Image (tube, rainbow, N blue to C red; front, side, top):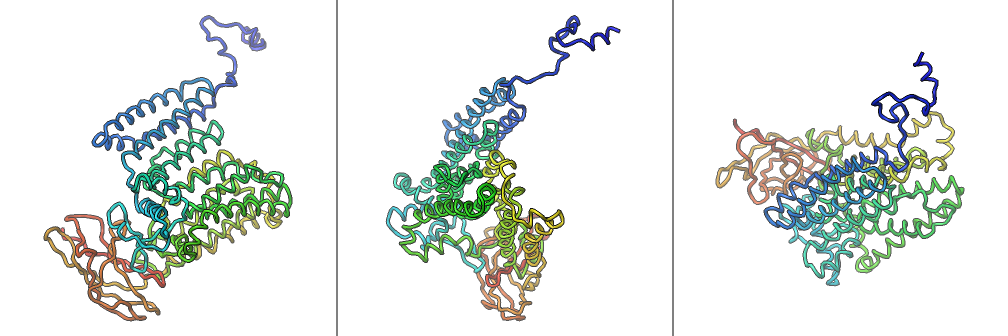
Length: 584
């Protein structure tokens, strides 16, 4: 009976049992100033991400620069304190202060790592040399600089024609920014300082512009996980492009609201144009931004007004891009064009983690490698078409779509994906699906049922998948018999030459170039000591080839399989044959 009476009372009438906790029978309501638990989780994950790679930096510093090691040790303390505060502070403002502390620790660690290692890789070395040429008034594009290469850190991009690329192959903005720094530092550090500074600036811009609860996620993606700071220290111009793309991507559906670009729209367009003048990856994002912007504005303004505002946005970006490139175009338009298009046209050797690995790593080769490139271009066009047809569904993923085609390309290294991941976060934090709810859709996608939409979606990607299938399923063009190595034990165990019988199984004349491969990377080109430079259709020949420098070290005992590869540039093909296993 007492239970029934108590159940009918209001909260303030309910009797409190002796020793009971006040309010235990009530539903807990979070105070308005209490941060959401998922916000705490993001802050904590960002804090944890700063541990990645910090120990190796501290170890390096202890042997070379103990004051830096002391700073890193202090950062360890800061990480631990932030971990405690992320779970214990009570107010949103307090947690926002923790987010700021996590950002500060991340920046401090980036600066420490840069101080310890700022020598750069091939991209940084090329950019520093380009900056030097700018200061000297000499041309940048079309000028080979072979003396910059040859060390393990500064590798040469090998081409399928049996050579390497020794020229500057990036848009000029990063070199222009590095030029005044190079006037003071006179080393590759000028380029790596610019890219590291750009990463920090881009991180701060992203941190400031996303909603407060997302800010530590920006710190984690840009400075944690050990991803982007390494690219910045190596001098990748793509880091500068990334920093400039952040303002262009954050809240991009707001661009041109009401038919006017306004100051923010013009600033976004300028950042896009400058990013395209910094590195070619920005070129692939630009058309997706334009299609998405057109769809959103057409849903608001109608076709003609949407086209006008999109054209003003594109022309502003194009004018900025052209003004940055104008000096170099005037120096030599043909060299400038060849240089800026070089990563697309150079015919570099296969590399990466994408679909081309079927032909490079898992089969004996392919006679139609060009079809991987066709597949990438077709997928790029297909995804643009899919965004045009389904802007409401795909608009929020606009910053991820441009990188899918690289998975089908002959160069599909993960840097193409990793370098732009902060833009994925920018879209997730500032471009929810609700911003696309009023975007215009073509009638065919608006009126069609599920089957029609599924057919459209399949139609835009099917040609790319078909081309990729042709490349992966094609047999190797050469039949390579057993590889006979010539071994030596003086002064080390290794190969000085190899003999292989080769048959051209195609109807085209092929000019093979040979190299060795252990795991994923190809060696420098081997020299043909005996055998014809070209093989006529269905002809055969015995080749004697020698490794670069006359010696290829091979460890004793079990080791990763060693392969001999033969590639041709026109058509683009590859054939792989294993070296015999070492004796037990």
